[in-house]
Length: 252
Image (cartoon, rainbow, N blue to C red):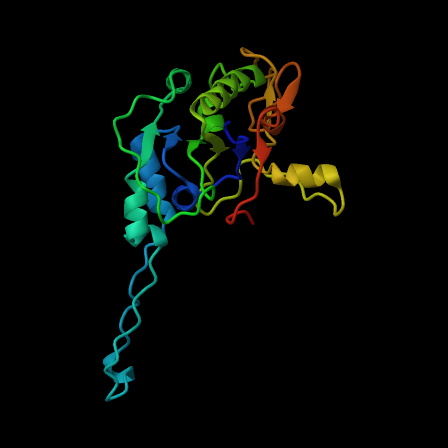
């Protein structure tokens, strides 16, 4: 039986990869809903590039101080540990450009493989789970005819079915931009407010979408906050039909 699907708060590409390397077990598949070049550019921008500080003027140095300066700290992803090398070899990375490609891929998931499962002798049984992780699923639907509860629901239903069929834990999350706020933050809930607490966990999932495919924005509404004709529903409510919302280390 597949684990319960869950949704994570928006994450930087570096946070996503660090989390997968820590929690995944063979076989795990990571679906990136954007072009390869765009993802690797975002990944590079999300990793601090440690540099040695410029040397002080020679006159400021003690005459007999020949101790070398401490090496700069490096991001964990830039340190090729044996665990990271061994684990990353068994993670399947797939780039999906459109909704049609994503639905077609999950409809036949899992694909046949000739890889030999690695021996996980260093992991405690049951600690990590095989996963099917989708990064940027909601954003992939934006500005398309599938930007609706109906369109998102159809994609999520196929994804959950693929996880059940393959025995994988399904995980969805969106990209968090470097140095920016969440795309659609929510208000600060009052303490002790159960509903507010649930919505806080769903940070990043509170954007409203129309109920049906083909909905249009109301006339004269061209701003980012433009309303949709007919009823709308929050993305978090669509996900809550199948997914459990979890906290993570990078959530502030």
